[in-house]
Length: 257
Image 1 (spheres, rainbow, N blue to C red):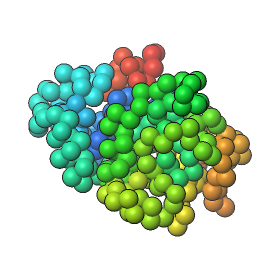
Image 2: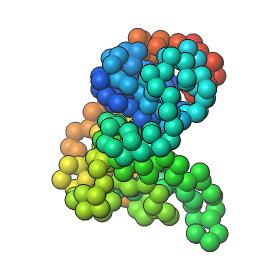
Image 3: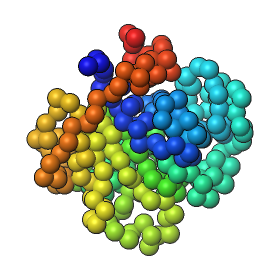
Image 4: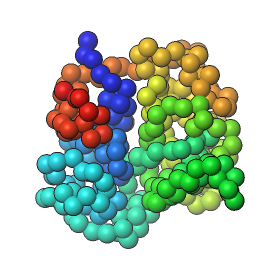
């Protein structure tokens, strides 16, 4: 059995959520690593689109941001924000988008703007960036962030990007073309969304994590199926590929193999 970190587990889960041939909109950090891992393993025909404008690149080094100039190396296209977020994303040409969240509610709505009161927030966050565009228009959304009870809230301090809003039909009513959040990956578990209520539910717990722990570390009524499986552990092949993609531990952390 291979040794692995919780960060590596998240990256592998994110990669496994990508299907071969999909057009993937990946953000800085673990989403980039997850998308790249998918492409060098089970999804060689996936096309990674970066918000900065580079499409289907063959960069030799891991990018430090979605606008890193090294992403231009042998790219199929080098365009701009109007094309990536407008023509591709809002045109319905992106199958899956990766996002993070500072807060998420039971319908997968996201806050990345501020924590606390609007006039005097405790924490100011980066805001939407391209997050609202991605959440509104990508075929489905994969959310990746570390697990903290304060992130899983009953009511957001601010709605930055739409999830399933208030439930079934609410996205369609507003004319959003994307399918909304489909998967939440944390360092403790995976969650998906009930197809009938559109509320978040527990999909699997990572090895060593209990269902009770997850349930105690969300601030709303989490849907828990009668039987919750354990997330499969990363294989040696996937871990080796991860370390090849990030040999300096930029996103995986220092001291990687």
